[in-house]
Image (tube, rainbow over all chains, first blue to last red; front, side, top):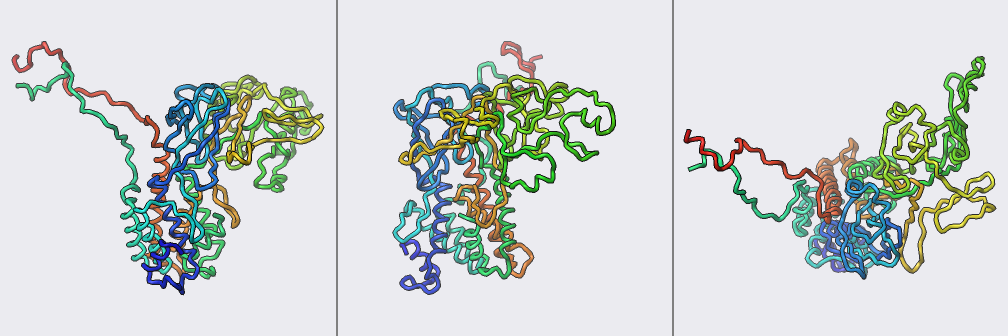
Length: 222
Length: 345
């Protein structure tokens, strides 16, 4: 039992030295792992670097992680030439150049297809470049007491409340479960992040200036 | 996480470990409903594949009754020839029907019929060459032939614009679906370029860098290969030259007890939240409104998490699709500044 699990048992009033109800800590561990996954997904707090050697003429690559699970990229970089690729998508590629699949050159853009494919455009004209992808990764679930917990310190308290909430849900106490879930969201900041994002794009811009030829309404003339 | 493992977790929250209130069949059905709901809502699963031209099929059949004997996971089957409803028989050319009805056969065939589509490139075919979508196909995201995008057209439009559509050849620019239930499509015009190794009456297909011997008698389709066990790299090598390159969204399929959802593992728990919401809401002895509300709220929150995840994946784009700045509408006519004020008149 690690420190997080111990604290969860303390919250629910269980003996942490020799627990009689949670002799098998698996349910608590499952809840903690679920909370870690949710926080990692929404905050992007855990990232790893994925390296792909590019091949001549090949534009589509599959991302297969051996530890953790790939969520989304934050930066795609060509090592050697040292420049970042811009994100695009299939719609834009088709609109700007219907023959985009036939182009072979230095990759300048990348597109995500589904949850495991990455497309670079144009397809590399030569083998040898290295693609470096910084991506948000959902850490693998820890399975034993000494398992590594890939979570920032300031999120650990919220994870405890998530597990306590699920404990109360299994006991049928919906009110306590909801209260602890609210605490989890508040402590992790997810109550604001999980809001539905508006469609309006935000940009930094200066106020528009009236031009010399702009017309002044009659009522405002002196 | 497999479905049977998920059900153990679900039962813990239902406080029904032995299935006395909600049995496994019920929970499995609800799980499939929720799974389908999430997949339809999110549409995040997409696959990339190359469909070889000519398409390779493992078996042909004629009558609908034969379909029942084909495995549901089999995608390489082809319904060949034509079916006549009145006589309930399969035929090749229209003159055969004339003969059946006692009419002197005088309708000439426009071409030859085939039982395997690759035969159509040996002769002038009198039938459309149906190419099957993958078994988990739901909708086309992007489709190209020989690295050139092709558009969808309705079957009716193709027929109205070209009465010889079955025999028109050229570089495909459109595709149509003669029958949506069949999960197949037809390229129009029919491509003339197709290559395979002739295995003495058997078609052998290979991708680039592969060498096939005609004596092996094997029909191969390479989907992906691992370069080296040390690189930890999985590559999918679609060879799109003279083939159909397809990006499609994946359709949800019915999960069994030992199946695992194709959704990313970190989204599996949201399926469980949905199952709990529906289970507690069902009119059973275990119905508890407060818990039903709790899990319904959690399931709604789960959908927002998924939506947030989908939008965050595209957040690195430097452009957004949308209309440009709208032109400013002037309430009053614009006059040059040298004009005297209206008030002075």
